[in-house]
Amino acid sequence: EIVLTQSPTTTAASPGEKVTITCLASSSVSNMYWYQQKSGASPKLLIYSTSSLASGVPDRFSGSGSGTSYSLTINTMEAEDAATYYCQQWSSNPLTFGSGTKLEIK
Amino acid sequence: EVQLVESGGGLVQPGRSLKLSCVASGFTFSNYGMNWIRQAPGKGLEWVAYISSGSSYIYYAETVKGRFTISRDNAKNTLYLQMTSLRSEDTALYYCASGDYGYNLDYWGQGVMVTVSS
Image (cartoon, rainbow over all chains, first blue to last red; front, side, top):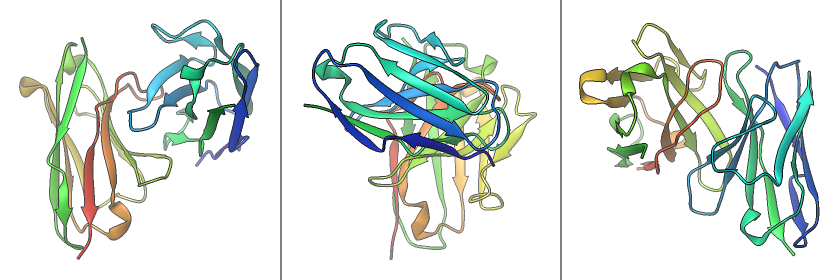
């Protein structure tokens, strides 16, 4: 099983600040996917195939990485971005998620 | 608009069974693989099971293998999860989500709560 380790576990950012969340895989994966889950809501796909924005996702979000190291970046933090973010891989079974990064607004 | 609506959750005693359903609309259900994912209270996401569009390929998480059965009825646009021998650690919000093997999970339902307790 591929273990995904996210960091930080929790972080806070001021409006306009840049935020980077990292996801390290225990083995090389071909792609990483990212989800946003707001409090009380279902997860929503943000990034697919490492760096492609899902439909309707603001372009302040971006994804990058390769091999075992991937990241999600929010260029300019907005209040509505406060949420928990999860990375996900399915290069090999089982599908696994990172443990999540809780992002709060300062 | 894509909609996935789960139902069938509730409070069940340890060792008993429960069957979840997920009705899909707004897309061609029979063309897509489907998944169940769960989230224990205050915890992260855990993938549970996958079924391919034509039910030929089925995969389970080790934690539920042998106890849970995923199935689908493409004529009814419905995905199922039959859960048996339920344990307290199966207590979670269960989501259905569309997504083919090896890729991302495109659309998620609102979730249905399953509580296993005596």
